[in-house]
Length: 285
Image (cartoon, helix red, strand yellow):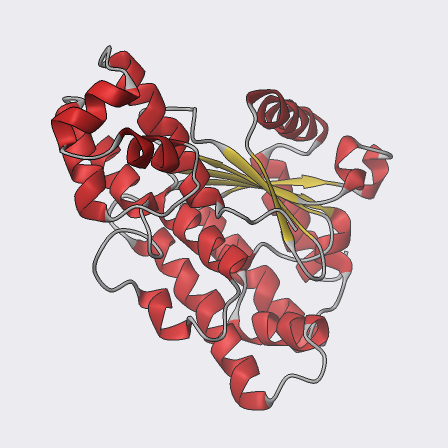
């Protein structure tokens, strides 16, 4: 499991290093102006230690970073669990592993989310009944109270789609996602209706890869690609398995998954035809 140090800390450190170099400062010069030891700047940039939001503000001031959206993004990546102040997921800290908290923070800050799903509907688009069925199947033996809290987290994440400036959400779904009756026929019918309604409101661009397309690169497994405003240096791919999350952050890795997503969209039905296809599945086609 790739999680030490936390992905947010790594992304923040590398971006602060880039900004320092853009400001034509050595780490020693930055430390002197901040009133720190040089080792503190080094530890922050190499993610060997966490960093407080106030320290990030000081560095951004030193590097003359005036862009408000970039400052907000980097402050949100600061320890602990995003920028200073209470975040809704703090109420679930004892329930959520660090990798999942990282995922939620990245999801909240991203301005574009591209996801491939080959098994289940993406979490941002799940209905309560569907989310409950998926959670119960994936975490066997969980007490009912904890299961409901995990479902609450899944549904709370969806608030990003209802804010004034939601992320651009693009989802490629394998036909299997639509055909598997998760939670039973009634729950699945409601889920398909929700997909159609959400897409028609413009909250998501849906593309379906039908079985007739044959093999495709997405058969290697689902993934999520987060992109952020102002800089592509923070882009990250997330791969999940049963017990862990793997974060891929290198530019060649991110580009490989971006190319894969583009290829999948080319193989998929158009968004318009995809909605017709989903409606056909909903009505028994």
